Length: 484
Image 1: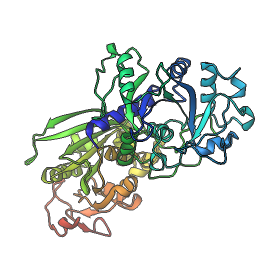
Image 2: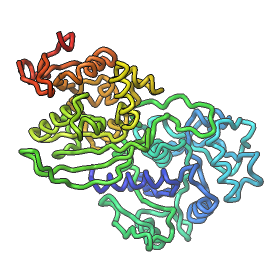
Image 3: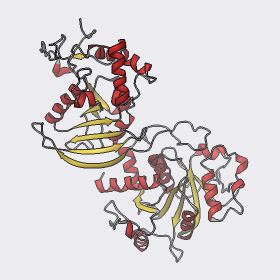
């Protein structure tokens, strides 16, 4: 996917998530029309009035079949002869919160009522002034229309699958085509960016009077983005629960990249610069996924990857109570030697997710009471491992990676990355007097692979005298027991 197209779609998704309106252009050889789209959660009376004014006046509610069935809203006709197969259901108003049903506020109230599955069929009139459209479950992979575009925008943005859409119409009563939409954007100083189909305009806030409209994208670019960089077409939506505010498939929104730059690296032999990206965690916004990227990985397979949890004591202080620092340095050597590779460093995973202060408390329990890492976490009131690695998978998806060669001993990381993992490379450990119990606990209680770089202790300082390199090129030498 063209990088500018991708940036444009991501901008539209973020704007949609923030409650802003976006414009989606259909294929020129299909309808050649542009629709306003806004999430039910973000829509206000002013937004609705704007859509009504600059559209045909027909505002539709895009949602899914399960929600329509819950509200008792049947198909408009059993014999649909619409040339594009638009799946209209019976028009409706939300009876408890509307009067005539046709005002901007009444239409907003009906739109927002679709978010609440506690509503019943008796709460909706038949007919009414809002027009439900039932999206295909596969979104744009099944039908490349505005209905499915709005549905996929909801899923990509991680909001309820309820959106308001309206077809743009000019003052002469004609449908707005591509050139009309460009002119409309210029007239309202709406920022356009992205594909070669659209001229990029100034996005300066001072030039944007109509801040609620953020991006103009196409159904084609949206489908291409969703196919390459998200999971929405790979998993069937989960069952909808009867809650007031839900996300249909219970998946967080696509991961958000906060910043990026090129960084020069000092200690590597063959690599002078790498790309650095920082993502915000979806499942836990306090997490930062710091991603170090060597080479072009977009669209590549079997990319060497390590998902590394932050460990201040091991990575920075070089503590010998764990093997985290060794694993990090070993992978940096791998990254240096490979044509392309990615290190994902997850900040917020200190102490298996309990934080540095609690990790130090756990150290004291291990030293003074003889507890292992699992027992000490439990003693402090935490789970043995509070981490989750789904955000790492999302970051890799965002990078466009097709498959990875994962450097890890941790089966939880393998499971989290799922079908992205084409091969697992075990990471050799360097046992010493201080980390032997830690390594044994990982093996016994977390089912980690145990790969020994040296099967015996080194000196008091923890330095090791390698006694074998057997099998290191084939992921190391496996032992049933960590030490004799």
